[in-house]
Length: 112
Length: 114
Image (cartoon, rainbow over all chains, first blue to last red; front, top):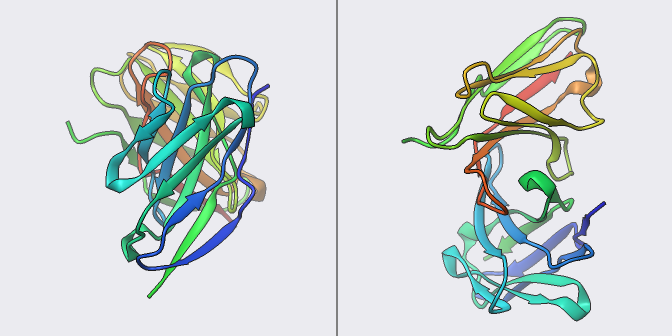
């Protein structure tokens, strides 16, 4: 079965600093990968997705992610973090039937 | 379309009671998914429908759980004889049919069993 690992439970960055959230997946074939963001008490919003092609994908809110097959990684990045980016971030891989397998999430705190 | 909506947003119930949640997907989406999210964890798949057919149920879905999507539109998730371990956020998502199409999530129903 597919699995997703997000090694960092919490990350704190200063406003304006760069951000990288790590995601590693376990999947035999070419994976379909997503990053979602969740604000407290809310549902999940899609930030970006990778299906195929260019390994650097751009998303909403200035986020990007890079697919690296050799490292089984799909790390999320943002060059300059805003206070409004504070939330929980989930990496996910698609299974058969379009079901999503999520990582445990990384909580991002932004300090001013 | 206002997106995926779930009702209620919050539910507090006593152990042993039955509860039912409703999900209204995006109207043209024929796939509907239920996930459960406990504190500190990512969402976990429970079950999904394609139109009115329930195509898969996770082993997490015990016999006390039942989901329906009678006309291929809205869906209900019922939990019978609730237990404290059922306390979680229940998330509904919908998507178009197809490989790796984007799933849109509702805001969830927060269940607290006391």
